[in-house]
Image (cartoon, rainbow, N blue to C red; front, side, top):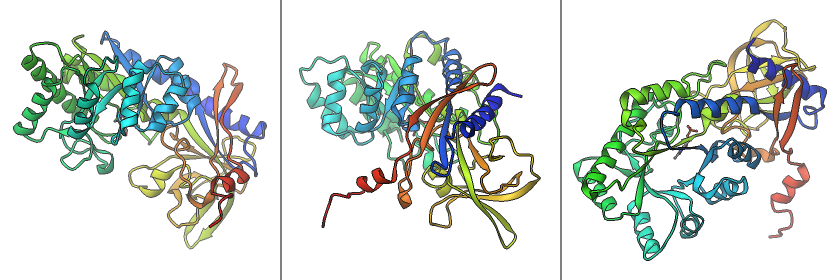
Length: 434
Ligand SMILES: Cc1ncc(COP(=O)(O)O)c(C=O)c1O
């Protein structure tokens, strides 16, 4: 069996043996740090033909400092999209020059801070560019300033995750010759703009469509440089967005698959003319993570068999609200933490929230759940337990990183404690009287 799967099984068993999943702590997030490390290495290897790179992790995929610190120690940079993410990246120890700020609604203090510490930042629109005009007047800064370009290449399979359409809020769109000329002129007039950024969407964007977006920003860079008569644009930030396969444990497409398409479609990216930044999130972390939940009850409702656990919208928000786009696999473990050998049956896995759509999924063909069994929800290392939703006053769940040795011995490090009910009540405004 695949080491990753063996280690995941060992981690579930070790959760039980160490009392880390229980009535008091019925749902936990798990992250296999060896699997994360393998993805970081795969990413660096896939793009190693480019002389100068900064592979950043999209902070939004895992807004937890220990995970970010682990990635910083592995040589990654960090893409941030809010003041909170910026602060987390700094607290995690990313050097400012390894941070790239992509917030869509940057405030003046946020921009000032990036300029002060020397982080890179991508301008989203012409009004933001005008703010930078004022701030850059007579200023020395090591900050790299780029422009987010919307190449308008069209939508992937999830409209809400596609960012390269004529109706998206992100970046400066190249809709026609006039908008393109306006952008080239604006950049040439500002020699301090040295980077172009594109991120055509997250999940569901075909590799060729992403490559086409990159092709368009390279063509734009070449036009800017020709008009400027210098290599003004010397950095390309190609964003993230590599699709994750939620159907199986296989990692497909891989970073190598993506790099192969880019080598074929946009060889200039590998020419050494440009430093290249990436901003992957989901593809770095999703497959390394799982959510383990105790099953509290099972019941029959007409012809449907329900298992009711403690993982729902608070840890799997996207799946619960858009089940057609974010289906998740599950497995059954016994209360001792062993893979269940109960007969397979068709079951629905429900969460603890008080609304009917709070389902991890329906029609799972997995060994029959019994109360006290454990359901493991796969591929949830990015944008799931790290991005909790506060509905129904459910506590933020505990999260553990794990690593297993050759003998399958599992070592856990607690990344986040389960929020206590007292903390939850206090945070809700306990001290306030109206
Ligand atoms: C600008 C930007 N970069 C990178 C990412 C990360 O995308 P993914 O997690 O799909 O790799 C996102 C996701 O929304 C994004 O908006």
